Length: 193
Image (cartoon, rainbow, N blue to C red; front, side):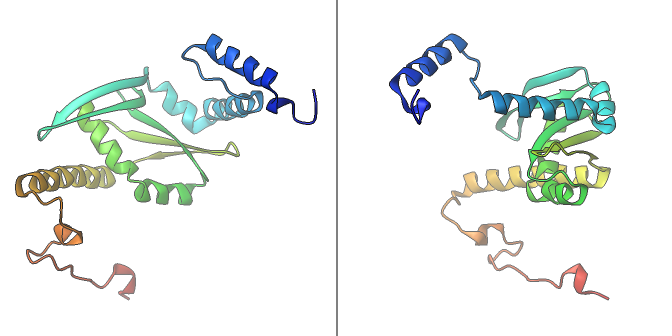
């Protein structure tokens, strides 16, 4: 009772009891559960995401691999012999906006890492879901995947270089293509006519 029933000790004791009963499960508010269920149904019934889900057999698979003296681990949302699928929640699943997210957030790099970890070369799909229930599905093309693989190897080489040369104290000069640490500012492609 009262103006703020959730602020009472009785309610706090009740919630602590519920959390203890839940064990490893996470206690969520009913409205959050309903919202998550609606979003899950949107993914299941979206024709593009449903098609990709049908191509997968395994869900939330933990993988571990080693590359160039580094140990990696990850959880692949869904995969099968024909593809890998990653589910991403995002601010806006609109196609152009999420395709920028793929680049900005390095999802193509993650894709290349998972492909390497599984030792497969299959199509990689990302299912984007926003809080409004919008769903868009993106397959990463071969050139983007090749760029991700190239970047993955480059970053591992640079990290090994950093370890071998004890270069952790360096700043942006470490990433320069030139030996003297100076970066070259080139004319961007959009300036050419």
